[in-house]
Length: 321
Image (tube, rainbow, N blue to C red; front, side):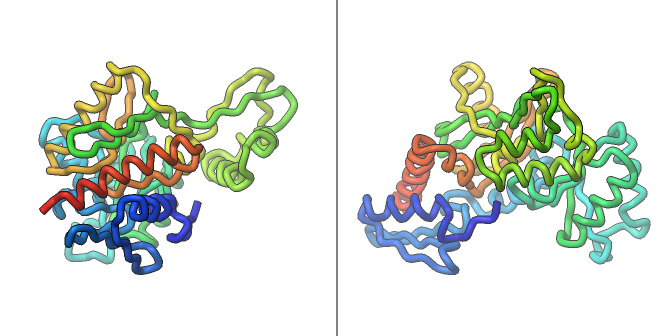
């Protein structure tokens, strides 16, 4: 879902916080840059990045392959992201090119991998490849708009979690629960999606995603009482729902992993995505840009929670010398 800068929930929240807390707020670049001033201290929010993380750590989190390698080096379990550069970057690409190694990587991972932009977010430009043709299509599409792409093994994820950490405190922890549809024995999957999705744009997006993955599935008729999971992606912007974690033992275990990531990269304010597969945890990615658009739009409670986290981050920024 494309959101105009002025309509971002972050912008709304920051404007309210500034007014409530006596902070002078100026906006630039169509609300993409927010400048906050109080007690002769000026701090900035650029996009979704707050003045809290070191420059190198922030850049590393924006590079999926770099973050994966560094976490692995420090002994933190992380999903592998293998870097490939666009062929026209001749000075950085081996003379034999990418394709041979891509095919080898594909075959080493049981001919089932995920292809994605090395710097993308929100599940955009993420494709699953299970045949040579799907791999070729995905790679060509990604290289048409990206200087670098990442390949990863496809993982049958049992659960995916997101933790938001500010300082040493876990401010929010939730599971990303993928959308499911219940069959009625006579409607096609696409008909059920259209009937049961609360927002038509979400239904259209789900159908578009499924048509790329398996168009035949859309015309299939699920059995009565049969639950169909609509996507292998766990992104909130792709239809998943955030369900806060109530199990304190699970939350503590996940927080410990997230904190180890922050220590490894010298970070202060991040969200960490952690997946569980075969009962083992591993880090999918780290985000220094704290985007909470989809979460905050789930309801008033979620918006207020988002606003409170942003408030704490802003006060932390403005209290630093």
